[in-house]
Every structure is written in C-alpha cells, then in structure tokens.
Length: 112
Length: 113
Image 1 (cartoon, rainbow over the protein chains, first blue to last red):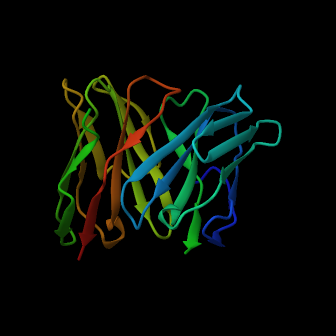
Image 2: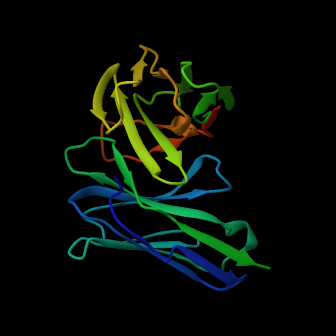
C-alpha cells in the first residue's frame, strides 16, 4: 500500500517557471526522499531530508518537511525541458529499516 | 563508482514459468531492496536484504522470493508467473542499515504472456 498522496497528479508549466509538488504521508518517519523517473526507467535519487530537518537545498531543488502536518514539498526553480519526468516522494518509516513507501507520483511536463 | 546494475533489462515469459532477476549493488553497499512498479499499484516494496538476511518483506505472495549473496549481489525469483506479474522490477542499494540514501538500478521489464 502507498504511504500517502502526491499533489498535483500532473503539472504542466513553461520553461523557466517554478514547479511545486506536494507529498503527504501517514506515519512517523526517519526520512523522506524525492526521486525522478523518466519514461518508466530507473529512479534517480534527488534529495533526502531527515525527520529533524525542515528545509534542504540542492542546486535548483528545495525541499521542505513539516512533520507536524506529515507533509513535504519539492520546489524546482527555473525549470527546463529536461526536468520533464515523474517525481515521487518516498518515506522511510521508523523501525522498518530501508523499506521505502512511495507516493503515487506527480507527472511534470515542462514546455519549451 | 559504478551504479546499481540489473540483469536482464527485458524479459518475456509465459504464464506458469518462473523467472530469476539479478541485482548488483553499488560497491560497498550491504543493503539491497526490491520493488515492483505497475501502472495500477505504483511502486510497491517486495523485500530487503542486509548482510544476507531478509529484514523486511512486503505484502506479496510466497511466489516471490529472494536471496542475497556474501558479495551483496541479490536475486529475486518469481515462480508460477501470472499475467499480473508483468511489471518493472527495480532494486535499490544503500550503504547503511537505515536512514541513508537509496540508489536504484535501471530495472528489469518483465512481460508475462
């Protein structure tokens, strides 16, 4: 079963605009990770944020985590056509080792 | 470092057959996890191995099994294949027991006819 919801299910923007994706989850977590997937290929790890962190940056990516609301957001700034992909959040639950529970994903399309 | 590798990349089988998929983790990584991805169910956890021991198991029937070798390479086996087993099977490796980043391989696309 999946941990929670991702919102929106699909997002279409112009190149240069910012894209924001949201993720909600249900249980206590060790960390939350964001992944990108191009056309049914493997998952590319983007960023990991631990449960005691509130915000993290990596290049054009900004991730926030609100454990009181059990939610996270991924912001991609100055998007490019190459950012077109599906984006998934995954939570590592407490006491479940490396088991990741994935959301349903957001399909991002960046138009040039 | 080389990334996670999975073989084969594509596989076509018929119902009732069995299949074995292989995953080689990043050098030095001791944890290997397996996931199934389908359009209907999304990404679902199958099982995780750490130092040759299965630590976690998802909600899949006993037809799905796995193992890990002393060099951390892992295999998963699906017996008595069903049409619904058609999916992308992904493995991920991590260097630590929990709390670390997990890196995925390119996947094996299994089609069951």
